[in-house]
Image 1 (tube, rainbow, N blue to C red):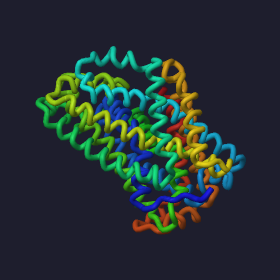
Image 2 (image 1 turned 120 degrees about the vertical axis):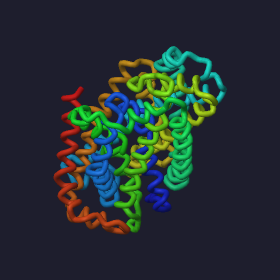
Image 3 (image 1 turned 45 degrees about the vertical axis):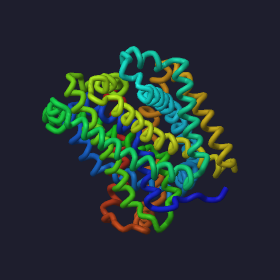
Image 4 (image 1 turned 60 degrees about the vertical axis):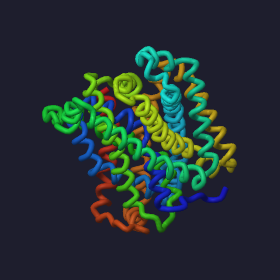
Length: 426
């Protein structure tokens, strides 16, 4: 198969941001911010992003450009590396499988909002009727079919072109929602919750570890899709600047999502600690009470779909890249094959909540951080001096030499801490 690359630096950054920006920003970040004290969660998150997040992205982008996708990169650098590459690809397929179930829910909500019916339903029972049902399987299949349609067109014509449209559209819609939210009567309490930290919660080690775990998941630093996307970067394209823009663009979306959600939640006297139901149960109540709510409901769930599909194409592309490179499959065959395989793996989770929880925990809690650690070790084995020289190629912004010990020692230790803390904190 011919080697694929990004057509432009802008296209790569849009795709990398698309991979990072997803339900982790619009759904999980506000959920965790609500559970862990608003600003008390936001402050540690921003500090950790600056200290760790940008380095994490440069590690995976640089590894990909230097050594190829996960199977090639790990095969060249680590004992049994080819099998480690297969392992992380399998993890990504599992993540795509459960992720597509949630995207299916969002599709259903978008269609219901578009027809105007979302304003007349009881949000709790409505969510209960579509989640973990045979209807959810149908919506999951549609979500996977749309993802297949984008990926099958290739890197430049499919993924890059779609992300160039979706990312600006996402930002515009999110800003519109945030402006509407903060201008609602009685929204001040939500702004206070989100911007004024409770210092007792900031000092909690659990808050910092949850923020760190959220950052890794949100930036997609799991040794998978970022390594694949890195393998498509041309030698004259800027990795440091791309990593900075991706990290802070991803965070800007998550932070703005908080401005779109918390002032509205407080304005109508609802609880910010609703957890996973914040988006699918609490916010529909907000839209029902808000003047012009149906318009903002349509915008919000379209926003979620843009965020979700920009991530699902990266998830599917990880396995497509491996199949076209190592099995000599055509892109069309590989895309359809792995899309259908993800459907088969995920469909039971669309019906059974126990299976759904199991596949989430296995892929993101127990195995996901191992992918980030494998990528960090592979870069070290490749040679940190060689990696630093690769990082500097085409760079408009040159990282100082402190990047080398930071990537070689600090980053792997942080990944291990994140992994161990998942078990300690439950």
